[in-house]
Amino acid sequence: MEQDGIQRKPIKKRLKCTDTLITKWKNVGFDDPKVFLDGIRTDQDLLWWNKLLITDSKVFLLGGGRNPKHHGRWVYDSEELDLWEVGKHSKGLHVYGGMTSKGLTQLVFINGNIDGEHYVNEVLPTLTDVQERIEETDDITTTVLFDDNEDWIFEQDHAKCHNADVAQEYLIENVPNFFDKHETPAKMDDLWCIGRIWAVITNIVYGEGQDQPKSLLELKRRIMKA
Image (cartoon, rainbow, N blue to C red; front, side):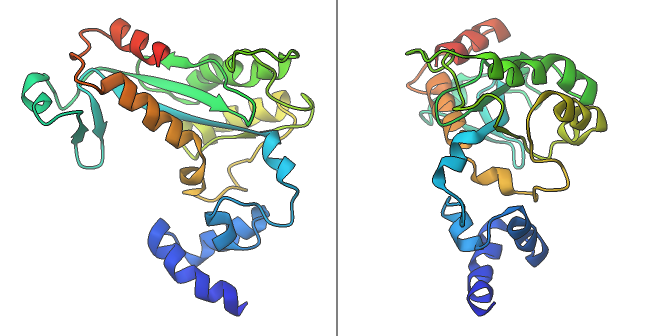
């Protein structure tokens, strides 16, 4: 439609995506790409969002926050650029987590690379066993996460280990519903709110002039405290 055509140009520029991806968004149920960009699902009751378990991962390095695309490093103050020892291949932790409108999953810490088997055996069980929670508590890491534990949707990005057949089969067998690798377009995950939580945690872990963490254990403690 005409209106859709007008909206596509700025959206394509902002997300660096194609017309095909915008069309795929609509196939998922987001009828208007601009409305989708604003974070609202059209033609759906907003309670639909309460069904989503949004998952994501973040790599935390001993050398500080780093953008792998251009090797830029996040620091609280420019003086830290000289104080922190930074190697191109700094050791770190791969951290997985998930969130709903009600609370959070437990974090999963992985040291090293992750393939499909690794993801299924060490990550997915923790992210999906939240459906066993049945009581509301004041702790967002233990409280029940869904209105109905038999009616919720698992979301993950398009990482290779997530799209592996073994991971897709695990989700088919263990969760009520999920966005499979054929349904969700690339870059869709960039718009989920969990990315903002990682940003807050990164600020706490590396910010306010803290000394550089000396070990992976110290780094993990900072992340857990955050």
